[in-house]
Every structure is written in structure tokens, then in C-alpha cells.
Image (cartoon, rainbow, N blue to C red; front, side, top):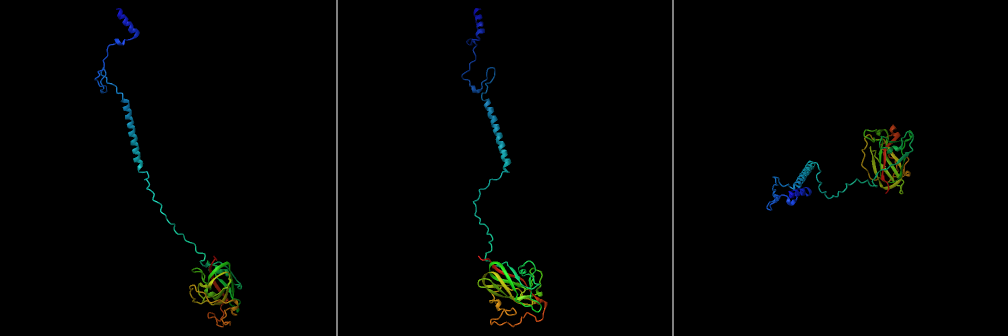
Length: 307
């Protein structure tokens, strides 16, 4: 009894003595632990890699979902995305289209001027010679009844020096626009006139119009540099009922006559210096209202500014 009580007391004081514990079942060295042998009581060994396997499965599922989303986005937006631009071609040199060049400075055209004449009362302004928009004309009264003569002087001021190459005159009253006012039969027409230029050579040009119904252009014998021109009306005639059409530009006429070479009737003197007694073939002996005036529709000086 004494030993049994001592062992009971020892168990109370010091706990169960391992050496006295009942032997436990030892593992057989031939047992494969990875084979999942059952624990005592029929339980299996716990899988220490189960958590890692579960995490791998979750990550794999998430990766598959992400790939699926990316593929869906590429399919959805792939049609609307702009196609990749082709490689730009090398630049090609393109020559600019030629621009119209301005007219050369020496191209002849009508130059501006002012004109005046000392015609009797009832005449119109000589500045009408420069009017190209309205049906007007320079109408000059030839004098009082019984004293109607030619020889009127027109003064032209170009304002500056121009290089002049030709003159153009439209004798008589000719319409300046289609269907415009035409008083061809109401006034005499200039058949011969003279231009005196103020160049260093005092160039003189005499022009014959032959009573043409339209502009008559005559080239100067040579180009002149002038700023003023004196125009002398040498001869007028009654307008022909069937006038000549306007001719093309004519060449230079014979040398003109100065004021001292005019006869008493205003006509130029022949080479021998005597006054011409030939009657005007286009004039009439009987007085007619048309003889009271002569008309000029336009007068142009063709040239350009000096270079």
C-alpha cells in the first residue's frame, strides 16, 4: 500500500511519468508517409500543400479572366481603331504653276491727257475726246455764218513725258457703244489734220482720215518723247452718206506742215509754196446747217512711260 500511495502522490505532484506511460504505437519504418496512411482511429494524414494549391488555382482563374477581358477588348475596338498608316512616301518636288507676268513697261497703250480748244460759243468741251463711257463728242463751231473755215487748234497736255508711237482719231460723231447715240450726218468730219509734238526734234505728223466712220490709227515716223501736242485741223468735209469702214493701222504719213505752211483756207500748201485751188471734193457750194460744226468722237495717243 505504501508504494501505491507514493505513486499516486507523485502523479498528483509531478504529473504522468513518461517512462511509466503506456507504450504508444511506433511507426513502421516501411510505411510511406506520402501515401497518406490513415491515422489511428481511421483518420488520414492532413495535406500540408492544400493552401498553396488553392492559391494557385485562384491566381490561374484570375489570369484567365484577365486574358479573356483583354481579348474581348481587342475584338471590340479593333474594328474602329485606325489602320496603321503606311510609310510616308518620299516628298516629290512640285514646281509651282507659272503666274501671269505683268505687261512690260514698254507696251503701248492710250495715255491720259487734258485737252482744250478756243472754239466759238455753242461748242462742246474738247475733253469729250477722252470719254469712252458715254456717247459724246467734241463739237467745234467753225465760225459765224458766212465765215465758216477750218484751221482750229487743239491743245493737248499729257501731264508728263511719254514715249509715243502712234495716234488714233475717230472723226465725226460715232456711237461709242452698241445702239448708242450717232450723229454722223449732223456735223462735218475731219479729213486731214496735223500733230506737232514738243520733243527735241519738233516732230510733225500729218494724218488723212478719208472721212472714215470709225477709228483711224497712224504710226509716227519714229518714237518721240513728248509731254504736249498741238493738233491743227487742216481740213473738214461733209459726212459721206456711205462712209468707209475703219481701216487697220496705217504706216507713217508724209512729213507734216507747220503753221507757216498753211494756206489762207487752212489747207496745206503744195511743195512749190502756192496755195491749192483744188476744191474740196466732199464739200458743197450751197450752205448747209451741217457746215456750221465739225465733230470728233475720240482721240488717242498710244505710248508708254519712259524706262
